[in-house]
Picture 1: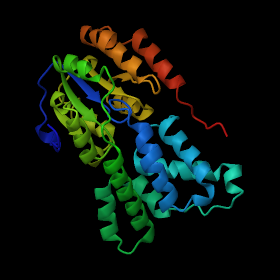
Picture 2: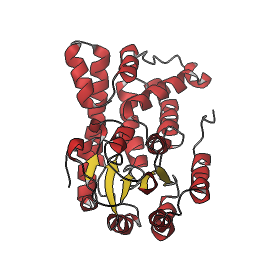
Picture 3: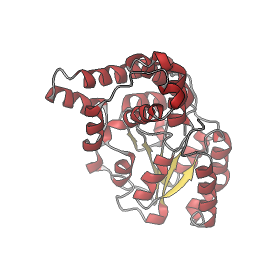
Picture 4: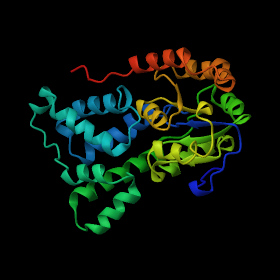
Amino acid sequence: MSGLHPDFSNYKKEKEFFIGIDSDGCVFDSMELKHKECFIPNIIKYFHLQSISKYARSAAEFVNLYSKWRGCNRWPGVVKVFDLLKEWPEAMERKPNIPPIPRMRRWLEEAPVHSNATLKKLMEEEPGNDELENWMAWSLAVNASIADMVHDLPPFPSVQPSLEKMQAKADCVVVSSTPSEALSREWGEHGIDAYVKLICGQEHGKKKDHLANTAGKGYDKANVLMIGDAPGDRQAAEANGMLFYPILPGHEEKAWKRLHDEALDRFFSGTYAGAYADELIDEFEASLPDHPSW
């Protein structure tokens, strides 16, 4: 189903169980590469943070990789980086010109979907807005860097056997904030798109909306599970009354093996919820801090 554009109105339940699966950092070990080599260099370049590049890099790595914001949408992720830099005394001593971005902040509050397509529509409504044009230039540069840099990254070792086990009993859907083009390319490159009914990306709404439009189509609440590596994945699952299985950052191989060897059997037999799930979530929450070390 590589490249399939989700038509949620036509989505139909086929199996007793449903499993939503995040992609970056969850199925693929791509988060470090994408952020350190693609997102962050372009943040420094397009928002003119050269004078505090080491601080900008540290703040962006914390937000996108090593904190409770891990896995957030690209746009609010950059805004959070700016906010952290403004609170960092050593960075501010260099008197950087961190952009105020009032229009971007308002767009993030008002727009239900944050993507290049919705930003482009806003730019058409407000031609000549330099702030919006720079954000679009940054996002397009990130996409170009990812297309050039991110390839030959196989799924974590236990992913494919886990997908085979899932597909036997569950309708499986990719639930991600990554642009759909990249998702389709990455899943198709390794032939694992055949295990999922739909590939839902950034353009199709937030993760909680993806789940509402798929897992909400007639499945028993005890039979729906979200697999992810970020707090946003858990929040999307909880917003839809779903169970959550965490892929622990830094211990992804172990988490996928445990899913394949143990957790999926518990999910399918109805013994996943309760103390077992709570223990996994406690371990996950403890691994991602709220505040940076500086």
